[in-house]
Structure formats: structure tokens, C-alpha cells
Image 1 (tube, rainbow, N blue to C red):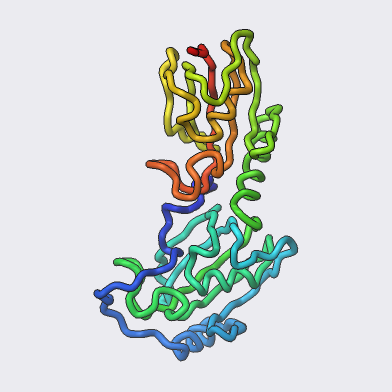
Image 2 (cartoon, rainbow, N blue to C red):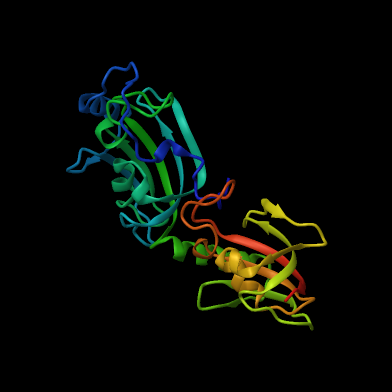
Length: 278
């Protein structure tokens, strides 16, 4: 599964918060980890923090840093082999994941794969995570790094450029990072950033998921009251103009998102500027 939603739905990897209620579970120790390694005939290395890792393939691309955005495939399971989470194409912001996962991914490069064996003190500690991760549990992750980006702005730009290529579009990029595609420039009045306009539009994510859509008659609003990418983008058209706006999260709903739109998400809008009303 390929995710453009940046994995805000898979909370397993996010940093844990202490709770007053610990799960009933026998604390797993380094001795248990070493027994697992022996029983499965593994060759593992240990870091100063206590993380154990196995590199099947180091990879040849960029190496993530502690502040990187990475796209990975992973499978998470316990020492007894039971699976608790699995995802292909997950996009993660490393400052927001558990310490063992953050440290472990920095041991690989793009294209690399291997296994992380994370003691509880580098995962969810004595309290666990809800009903999924018991307190004191060792976590194991089989991981493969598909891509690594310096930050979300870079990652968004890469996704937009790939979308443009995949859909054979001709787009112009502005200084703000907005991309726009002009299908029909239009012939009427051209709005400014504080104009009142009537626009028919469809808003969707890069995977095609529609999150908002007007009727063909459009909706009237003042451009100054909208997200920055929409305010800017509409001004590149005249009345009767049609096209597409592709905007990074910095011009959309930012790091926190809005409603069904996750944070750090690229937004696309097909627009038809029906009229400029002032």
C-alpha cells in the first residue's frame, strides 16, 4: 500500500506518553533479547543505547538523520512472533517516532533493509501503548527504507514532481513552492489576492482521495480568507480559466492538517474561475 497520508493513522511508532495504568505483562530484558537472537541463529550488533540491529543490506542512497522524513516498509512483532503492526509505503517524521526506531533507521541508507530489536526503554517503557503494546515489551521491526528526505518540504516537492510526471502535466512552480497547471487561462477579469470570486473546484490528495468539492455553479468567497496556496493560485487565472493547483503543506493545512486532511500533506485542486465579483 502506498501512503501519501504520511502515516498519521498508524500510531504504533509514535512517541509514547506515560499513563497511570500499566498493562499486566512480565518485563522483558536483555537476556530475553539475547535468547531470541540465539534461538533464531541471528548475527546482531548492539549500540550504546541497548538497541540490537541486523543489517541484511546497508543500502546505497541517502542516510536518514534524526530530523528526516523517511518512506519505509515495516513489520512489527513481539519476541513470541505475534504481529502487532505492518505497513508498506509508510511515511514517517523521525522526531515523532520511538527512540529505538529513530536510532535504528539512521543505521541504514536508502534501499537498505534489516531488523531492529528494540528494548522497552527505547520503545514504550513500563506503560506500553494502549491495548496494543504491553508495558515492558521488546519490539522487533523488519524494515526496508525506500526513500529518505531532509525535511517535509523536500518530500512534498518530490511527491508533486512525481505526480506531474506520472500524469504528464505541464506545470509552473512559483517562488512560494506552489505548482499550477493552466488548461485554459481565461479571457475575463484577473483577480487579485483580496478579490471576491466564484470558483468551482475539487480538492483531493495525490492518491486521488477527494476531500472537498463544490457544485458546477461554484462557491463565492474572498481569496484573502483561504489557505495560501488557493489564494495565490487563483490569481494566475482570468474569468473562465481552468486548471490545477498543487500545493505543499506549507501552503495548505500545515503540520496539523484539518479534519480528514492529515498534517504535512500535499493538496491538489482542480479549479474553474467562474467570475470575479468586485
